[in-house]
Length: 280
Image (tube, rainbow, N blue to C red; front, side, top):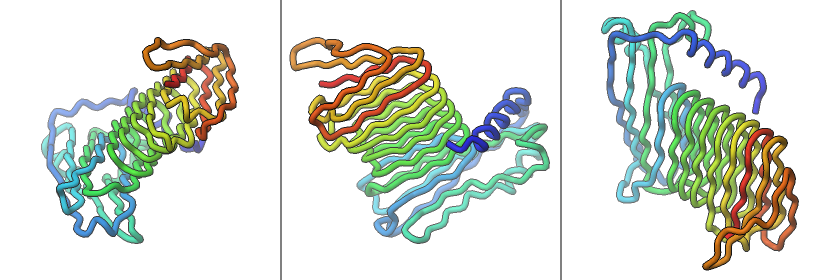
């Protein structure tokens, strides 16, 4: 994760805490766009600052559909309207990639310091077939269902995924719930909590690095290959369960290294927090 970018984002978040304008007026509007011939698109990217997003399959649809809700809070109706007139949601396509970018009005303030306007844009994006997805977001929750490869860069926001092929996640503050992973997940996070599960015999890799946070990972025993677990100030547990039995702790300590016959490489590391790997 880029250190300079992280430093700037922490400054930005500090200012948000110190300067939290209370808007007397609220303006809301919606944005809709349908993309024909979605089969020609292999990847969808979203670049936004504030707002939740939800990517999901809608196989009955013939088009890729984008729905957005814009919310602007300001000191007056006039201030909100003036700001809104400068907001643009650009949707472009090229080289099999569909790009969605939220352009906000430029301000002379530093990271929004002294700005009396707050804006969020929440997205719902439905697709008739699986695509690769990339999200770049500062504040907001991310929910991705039934997609291929997913790339996420978020500062503050929960990450929920279900039925994805693989994922790469960079986060500062995030709780993650990732279910039914098919092949791989790579996570680099500062503060957070991870719950991850897979029942796929094709699982290849799970790598997670945290500074502060707990991890619970559950995979099939048959997939377990090379394993590395390490927690500097917490603990690491490898637990196994056979049919009709309760969970049994196979190994416990600060560091656990195992080499099994399965094909999945598992690496779970953190500085502060507990790590649990469940194999059944």
